[in-house]
Amino acid sequence: MKAAVTLAVASVLALTGCGAQTQQSSVDTFQGAEREVAQKVEDLQEAGKSREPENICSDILAASLVDDLKAAGTDCQDEMSKAIDDADDYELEVLDVTINGSSATARVRQGDDGPTETMQFTREGGQWRATSLSSSSGS
Image (cartoon, rainbow, N blue to C red):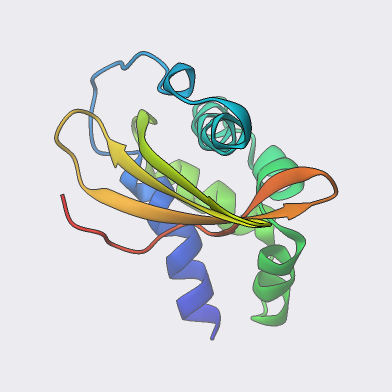
């Protein structure tokens, strides 16, 4: 379980480490709840760029994901620090957001032609929080 949780968390941060191109924010293309989800993706990008693993753990990830890391025998901040250390760039583009009640998915691409991942979110404490950071969805 530890390896699966760590891999899922680290892979989207590793995804951010593959390109050097600067993108404009994709948040502006969304409205309402979709915009809030897209903003969380941008918050992840900024926290990685600013080397702030504590912000990822406290402000972006859902408590259930942080708890999964803890149950797997690892610490969220340590895992996020490792993922940030492995990345060399943090540009993410939100391609699509789908809201279904209190859950949401965001298709996210690194750069203009990088790999595409799907991030899962839930409403927690009045905010969108990431419950899963990575599942491949093709390019």
